[in-house]
Length: 406
Image (cartoon, rainbow, N blue to C red; front, side, top):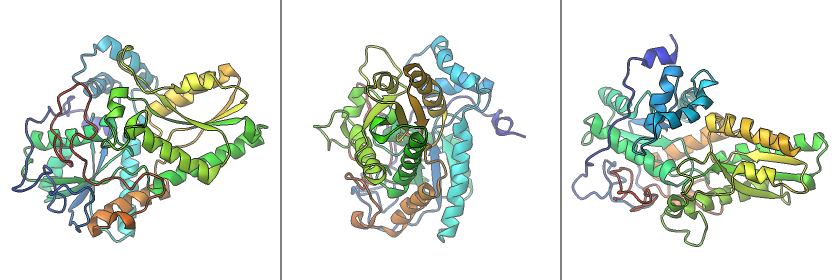
């Protein structure tokens, strides 16, 4: 029986928005463990967890799943099915299956093995924000197993509404939907963009990609390294990063990506030309989003015969990588007459999996910021999100956990 058959009987909609959150007496962080309830930016009190939750985006597992999944992703935005079908085509040509479900399960399996090898005896649960297994179902299962304190790992490395705050909102929704707001406590690991285990796979990929370009006859001074990540609305980007980057266009979201790109190039290819670009824009044409677009950047290359595309905004080769980069960006490169190589995402790279174990271990042990692995000019990032950090621009804040309200 395949995964879709096992979950076909489940509902098609994600949990509704939470109407409230649970605060213990004296706490400022909802549904947090005692170590994190006071809201300190870095939690240096050792914490005893019962489980780890790998929190994925989710993706369809068959043709019948595609539209319900996209409705979940775009909930509240009033997008008609006719427009969703335009995006659905990306999934339909792959049998209605997104690789992200399989990739998240593989990451969970690798994390279980790595935790055990490190002597950390914790079960790993996998729950998705937009498709089965839904977070509320997974939390209910964990509670039946006797779990009470969970350390959650979002499958996103950076700070923004869609890559951090929305996970925290969905956890609050799931707790209330499962009737567990006063029962389960959930902490979140720090945003892990600056961990050397996240950066290392990209360093390896850039080195290998540049070597491949040179073997194909392209000297280093004719190669452009293009780092790419998901574009987000400019107003959301400006709210990202706890207000620490007021002078950086794109706020903390852009600043964190730039820091990673700078470190990758310093380690892999000092002196080679590079830039940060964006991809997968959606939404109303009149709403400003972060630019430039990866296709515009490739089409506008001058004095370059090769381009190396490095998807530093993603942890796995999901649909926005294999369609937007491997298909659309490659078509653009071909039309421009430019040789293109796309660097792999971390996936289950041993260094990345070991980094996730580090994130768990540092919270179990209560490590100080100075004792935490960090390789970029920014970081390590906060354990507990600051008030209003990464809130959605132009919208009333939804209830969230793992951070100080609102």
